[in-house]
Length: 329
Ligand code: CO
Ligand code: ZN
Image (cartoon, rainbow, N blue to C red):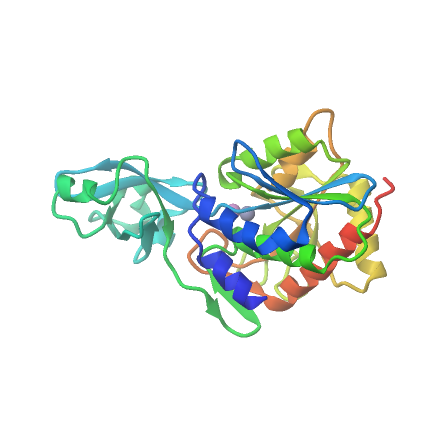
């Protein structure tokens, strides 16, 4: 599965430019599903029929990126973030555009580093003039952070664990699932990082009986980190709440029962800041019972997001069992 993870996390897919990630996933899941659809927002909906209620799964394909806002006479690009990104994570980093153009993040001279803001930074693509820069990039082009996948053995590091690791879990679960208890609508969503946009329209179109989003969540296990009861390596989580939703209590209980019945280690997750596709699914039409499973992840929204491989494997087992166990409400 590590080979699939590497290909997914190294794919180019900042928010709004998810095409290459989507093609990769389509190729991967095609033999394991009955039908695939791509909607107007670019969501990939992979349907696997087992009869019964509709279960919607959602993993977002997009990653945090930057968008060119201005190109100056010397060929330097000004930019803004697409999704929640701290300028501090960009110092010394590189980005790359869909056409392969690589850029280096630079910054103006500052009196104090705390004054750093996105508008004090620029991207240097090695051009000497606006004309030269325009040969490679244009206003409105997006770039993703450029950083290779790194396998530390037990721990895996990448610029896009959020959320390709969940895409990998969802793909692998579709491959392994045996006795479906649902008609499964496995959605690989777009534009999560700018407000759960893909999931919103996908959920409206599908109108599932139950929704389960899969994403990463923060941890509280590094030196002097924010207090949070999630640790790398102790299993996937059953989310209780984040900024976008209070998970439906009956779904949360169902998820806990499924984990316990199958000896899958899990952690209860209370995420103080940040949302998930679950929030959009739950608020669809007259409301959809919704839960979220997360893979614990350190350093979210940086070039080096870290997950634990055991959590990933247990996450696959968990999602398989969730597809195989009917939800009685
Ligand atoms: Co994110
Ligand atoms: Zn995410």
